[in-house]
Image (cartoon, rainbow, N blue to C red; front, top):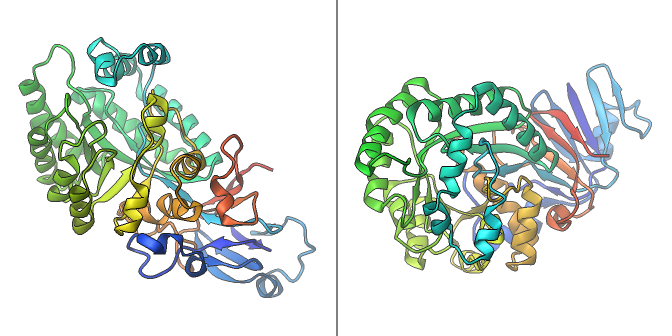
Length: 428
């Protein structure tokens, strides 16, 4: 089906420079180089963007019959944007999409002064979710994932990375990854799987025994079944050490599986520097990483991914050095970290956090939620841009300015979403 989006407000095309690379520094705030003015239109043919041009000219050439209302003739539809701004599809590059159970009771524990680690040591945290998740079938997990992915789509997310990690044994991890791949087949959003067997150490297993299972059993099984694009490790004091992380990452690399890593969430343990040394695609959380580690990540091409929803729900300072990253031209992205403690599926809400609570420019936040994470996905058709010849993933927002994408924290700013060339969501 063809779609002509007419009478657009601003269009965030995000095509300044080499679109295969992230925008950094002042370029993240350069709207003049990355935004079309109002009055343009977008022609979608099949799954791709065919033309971005003057709206009146497109309508005259492709829809001379159009009377100004939303209309469809044959396989061709005209969608009147009526001055609404258009942004690229949002890319949520760090989620824990599939799990069962409920951890709401942990709020009281945090308010009583218990740390994340203390709650975990008392039988809560990841271990509690593992107990609730292991008993779920692939069918049950798939249903959960479809529901959550569809909710994310309604707020403009078109691509999601999704991790396993709540199985912590070979059978359960493979079941989670199978379900993630099933979700991808049954939702409009593109769902990209990551193996996170190294999320925690299961109870009643020694560290040495489980590490051997990860490297000698889980990774080979994941590779044989082809169910994950990346490997991940929770590299943090009290969980997996830097040395253990390196062993796991190198073990995955032997099977051709690159890594995305949890690092430096609660303390600077050198995790981001390790991620850079190992050539990880991204180092995520990175709240406590040192400037030297951030420079090393920039030099190696390892994307820093900030997850501001996590300190929000844990009651921790929201002090990620976003301004310093822009000043030093260190590439970074933002993502939701959707998980049992941080039940945020809305990328616009994450954008609101970094703008209202952390002083980030709204357009720079949009770059960090679209083009920048797209460069880490190994998906050539997904660029986080609105450019001729690329996959047609985009959303109309209620504002006529692209900056409005993240300025309604209690409301959904998305009017209509197009994924892979098809209108999949209309919040009219």
